[in-house]
Length: 171
Image (cartoon, rainbow, N blue to C red; front, side):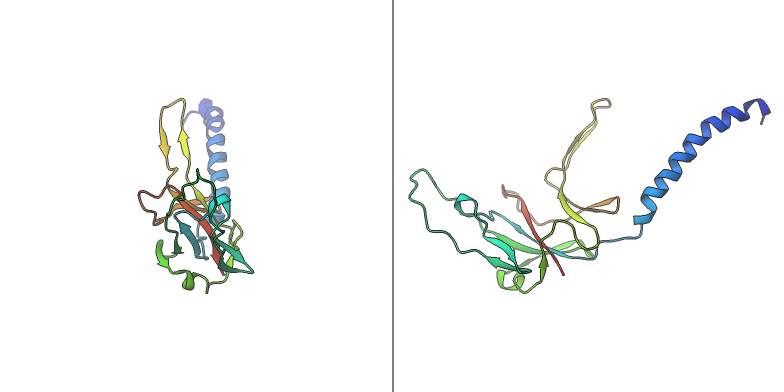
């Protein structure tokens, strides 16, 4: 190595070293952290006419709202889409269907963020104008937290227009 090139080598290596140190400072603290709380979600139409939901969390437990009286609106044609409930196991990355009676036994926290700092979020459309690459994960769901995200294996039927509704974290 020539001594004339030493300042050039240092000038080029300092930004690279700074990027590596910054990336380590961001990603290493959450490297071994994994979500600890399972959650319950609903698929299908979780709403009655005029927007009242079928299921909600009351005092930490899943409760079913009574169906409102039918409307006399001649233009309203109710869509009968079955609402299904699922328990998502974050350790095995699987969902298992529950009955309402089973789901109502779990104590739930309805906040968007779990006690260990994770959220369940829908994917989005990402396009890169300059390089022309894009990805469309809008129909996928992820668990995100501690600068990491993991795609979830949610059970959603192919004709399920309504997607999912996150109901709560199992305590």
